[in-house]
Length: 443
Image 1 (cartoon, rainbow, N blue to C red):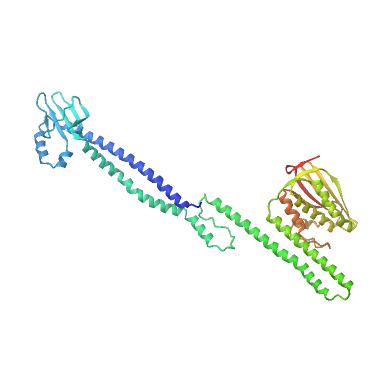
Image 2 (image 1 turned 60 degrees about the horizontal axis):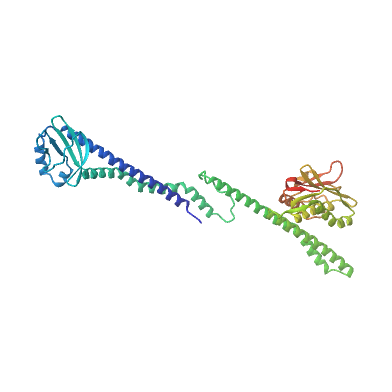
């Protein structure tokens, strides 16, 4: 499910702000009501304190009769009680009972609630009253006015939040636009300028991915170019050999030319097969592994190459056979050992010797292949695992991919492969080491 980060941020921010605004408005409303109530109570106290024995009451009654209904409702009612005289009031026909003690009280009169403040003097009692409905109306109006700024600012805050979120996420929108406008072949890094810190790791990982894709594409491009170059020579030779077939002058000559053609086709097929293996190992990063008897696997590889070695007059044999089981892909290991044996046979002169050993030492199990061929110049050793690299001074033919395949398989199997010249004598030592954390010794 795809969702809008901008929309969610805006909705959440506006929602939280609105919730806080409503809570703040509610608190302001209640505090304003309480404050107005206290203020009106204080007014009752002040009015009551300013009243004498009632000399002002006749004038206040006359004023009351001249007021309209709204003014009459909002005014205070003053009552004065002196000894045994009748209670005098600023409002005719207002007969609210006089309190017996000084202080505030709530009383009912003509089904209406009244708030009163009473002061008891030695010679008189003064009581000032105000309708509770009027007080609530005044308090509500004041509280509403106190809340209006918050209510008025909320829509403005919504607009500012929407604008702010848009500006905050604008760098991400700019990155999206830049990627959208890119050419499909562009693998240059994405600019991280002005990117929020939270988004920077994502941009970094994307740039890392683009770099790996670029390296992979470059590797494949070089592979294709090298493969085309390597195939050009055997294909040209095949074309020449096919042309030579038409110039055969005798059955014997035709048989010889067909033998040359067959040999050329075999070389071309070998190169193509090696190229396919190399491509497969570079694409696949993992293999299916199972418990494999390393010693038996090496013996099988040696048996397969003994006829080739005997044909070249080379003594191929196993000098050490430590038993060890490892967790590996047996088919891949056969190719690895086979390529090392094939390389040793190709570069060992007639009458030479190749010794193979499987040795468990410390926390490693090693397969070593030692020959007494010419070895490899020291300055060429760092490049022996490069694709299509050959030691040009030697006459042996090869695809130049065998050791690259060995290195690719070794990486897949978490093994370490090394080539080193023998000390003091001619020859090369090829060693493939497996850690005991990846293998289980038996026997």
